[in-house]
Each structure stands twice: as structure tokens, then as C-alpha cells.
Length: 358
Image (cartoon, rainbow, N blue to C red; front, top):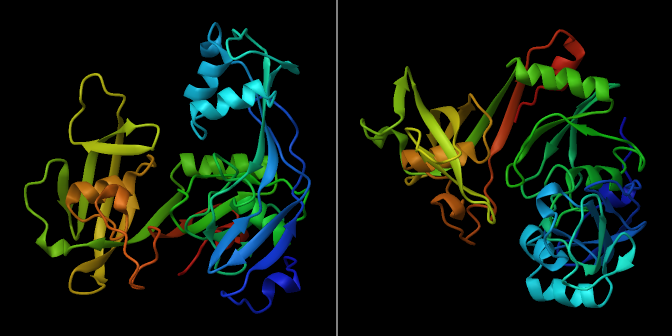
């Protein structure tokens, strides 16, 4: 059985902060990697998991497109988590170095140089905390967990210790030095089943299942409006029995904030990818909202959210794509879409491990 600490499993008082320490697995300094501190502290308060501020080293080698540009220009344009004036001060203070040396903001980058940025008192965004992350099933090679909404699977952007794998290490589900391999994507704002491989060979095998469509994903979404009022002539929309199919192209309209749009036909000059999803009604949530089951045929970023917006039935509290945030207790303040996964595999124990019934 997975190990769980009594501190994690014990009663939780949302009105008082609970401090907890975490010692993550060491992260080697490699191309595009970051050096994590040896020790951080969590604060669990009001249903949110906070990480106490810590120092952090971002490390990367100069990419070809950066060659000939100044260190300040590259930092300000490529790493937008901080404003330009922050990098000006950090370079002047020696917190941004090139090949281990302090440099001026005008330093022209050369191919292969090593850039290290030490972020002082780094702060992570809080994530939802609903108690220990549930382990749905486990085999010698595969770990299946139920990821909460708001939590990214792996460290990225401003999330490191508030990522799924780091939290699993902290709560004792896996050893601090254990390696887990991601086998598929699940958006940070989406809750649902995640398959984590314990070995590279298992990760390759599961990846092949996804590529061969042997793993089928199903999502549930609570949306605004009534599907029975869907118009009959919506571009890119057809009816397939009891289902509605949206098929067309998705492209990014704002990479800085990560927003996408749908078009029924290819738009010349846009870097669009084909995307298709089928939807069917599960039932009414109330007079103004319904629950739909979503069957993505492709796996594009924000695909389901964008397709639902195109249909005119956005996820109820997804303010990025037509929904609205509200704090009246009827919906969490983060878009909540549950994922079910059904796996047909040659190994029955892994097929069972990869099936979740909500």
C-alpha cells in the first residue's frame, strides 16, 4: 500500500494554517532545468495549499534564436514571469550570470553559453487542497491517481512544489527520490485521472497505447445553457446519433496568456491544428446549466473548452472561454471538468489500474 503520513491523513481545520515540510528529489542542473532547494514548507489554509517563499536557480543554455541578442532582451522577452525592470535589477545585482560570470545587461549571447537566474524569495501560486491526492490503483510499473483541479502534473512556470508529482512525494505516496514519468497531458485547471509510469519502458508502452487510440478519454463538463436548444446550422458542427460533433481547426491567439480559438475552415497564414470532439447530454444541473459528456478525438490544448464555447455552451465558471467566476458556493472558482479513462490493454491488471469510475 502507498505510504501516507499521519499528518496528511489526520483532521484538517480550514481556519488554521498547517505547516508541512517537503524535501523533493534533487533536480540536476541540465539544459533547460532548474535547481530546487533542499527544503520547503507548505501552509494549508482555507482550502488552499501555499508554498513558503524560497530561492530557486533557473538554468538553461543559450538557444540558437537567442544568439546575438542581449541577455536583458532575452530574459525580458523569453521569460515573462517577471517584468523587464526585475531583470535589469537582477542582472545588475549578479543574480543572472552567464557561464558563471556577472555580466552587463548589454552582454551579447553566444551559442552554448550557460545562463543561471537565481530567483530570491520565489513565490508559487496556491492550488486547491482537498486532502491527500487519491491513489486509484497501482501496479509495479504504473501509478494511477485522481488529480485535483488547479494542480499541474509536473513542475512548470510558477509551479514546482505545488505540482502533482511534488505533492505525491510530499504526502508519502512515492519515495522522495522516486522517478515518475508522465504518459499524457491533463490541463492544470482540469481534474481527473492521471497515469504515471514508474519506468521508462512502461511510459513508452502507455504512450504507444495513446498513439494507437487504445486509451479512450471521457470528460464531464458543467456548461451554461441547454443542449436541446442548440441551433441546427453551426459551422463545423454535425449530429452523430445522440451526439453533437465539433470538427475544425484550433489555433493560438495569445501565447503569453495561452488562449486559443476555433475555426471550421483553415485560415491561411495561421498555425492551426485539426481538432474534433463529440458531446452528449448527461442531464440538467439546474434551469440554466447542464452536464455534458465529452469525447475528444484529438488532444489539442484547451480543445474541449474552445469547442464548447463555439457551440455556445461554455464551461460554467471558465471565465477565459465564455463562463463566469462566481463565489456563491454553487461552483468552485476554478473550472472543474472530471475525466474518466477507459483502457483496453493486453495486460488486464494495468487495464484495471487505468479505469476510474467517478
